[in-house]
Length: 322
View 1 (cartoon, helix red, strand yellow):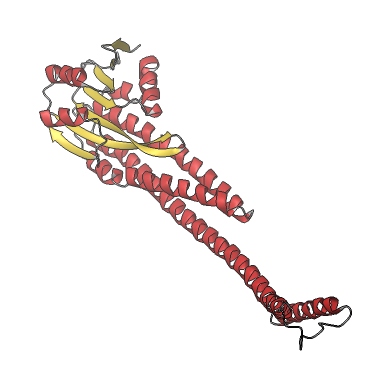
View 2 (view 1 turned 180 degrees about the horizontal axis):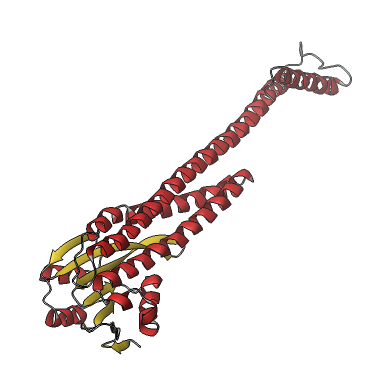
């Protein structure tokens, strides 16, 4: 069984110790919502670069992922997508990876990380890390769980794209606009989060370990690179699909507007001559005004107007403007 210890409100520790190995057990420190106390704890216990500690303390999300070697450790900043209020935002994780330990600092908004930590607490013997007791392998397993969690978001995007397509072709263009804009935002954010993962993961394939053969490390981390490539391909396809749907919706909207404008134009063209006739026959000139003294003159004028309207409609129909 793994040794679990809650060091403070925001710091949890799990020790993975296989009886098959004689080396020192592997420690994972999981720190949520790191503040000055947590950073001071790390500063006293580990010889970390002050610049890396300050980066972990920063409340704002780092603008780009990074991988920098420190003194006997590797410092990583990686972003993973987080679903919040129907939108996708970046969740940041800072990693300190050294011999015999892995430290993660995050804002406690990544369910995949918390689930994997709980798995290490309860069933550590089911992990690949249990076999090697290597921080490089523990990092690999954690990153794999985080990468796999991205697929569920991609599936949700695909379902939303199908829903948007049905809305578009059900002639509900106004609702489709909001759906498409929300999807475009999510896909853009996902692309921004995942675009640099492949390069950083390729760099991790060169990671050295005194416990795990180099070929094994390369094999595992190349799986992460493949996951990254596959996720990017999905995002490229979804980007093309949503752009095609956006263009289709715009075309349908333009067609509807053109149809409305055509109807209004035809109505105006028909009404204008009638208005002109009504104005002419409404002049206060008794002498010389047609039908002024004729019985049923009003109905004769109405009949002339109806004949003019019917003639214009027949003309529009012949020209195929209706």
